[in-house]
Amino acid sequence: MRELIIVVDILAAIGLIALVLLQQGKGADMGAAFGSGASQTLFGSRGTANFLTRTTAILAVVFFGANLALAYLAVSPSSPKGVASQPPATSAPAVPAAPSAPNAPATPSVPEVPK
Image (cartoon, rainbow, N blue to C red; front, side, top):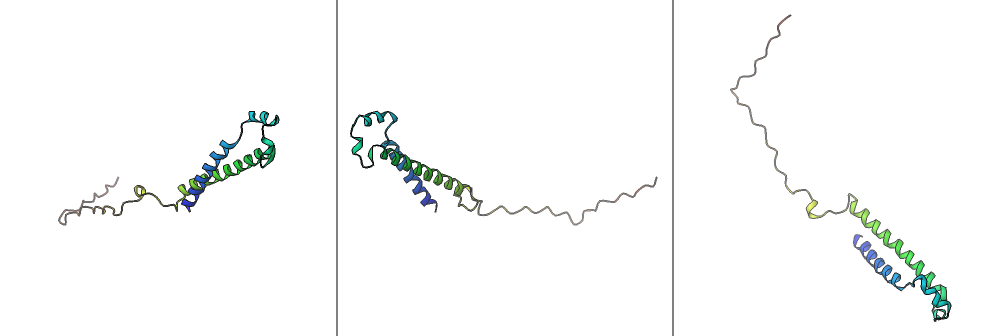
């Protein structure tokens, strides 16, 4: 599951980069107004900008969604951890208390003195 989300994330990032580089800046609209060939594009003079803008927005949502899903999977308790974060295979045995000597006298109880 995680590998699929990573692949989607990488493809969305590459698509975002390509679409942003394909888009024209705001100053390029003046050239289209004077007939620099923008009317002969597949989408028309304004159709290309709308198509690229919508596609960029969709890819941005996919990119951020994939990153949020990866962040959730990284913090969820059921996610597999790395080798360094696993507990040790064997734990040290508990040290038993030192046995008292069998012939040691018990502590004498002190009788109460009446007042």
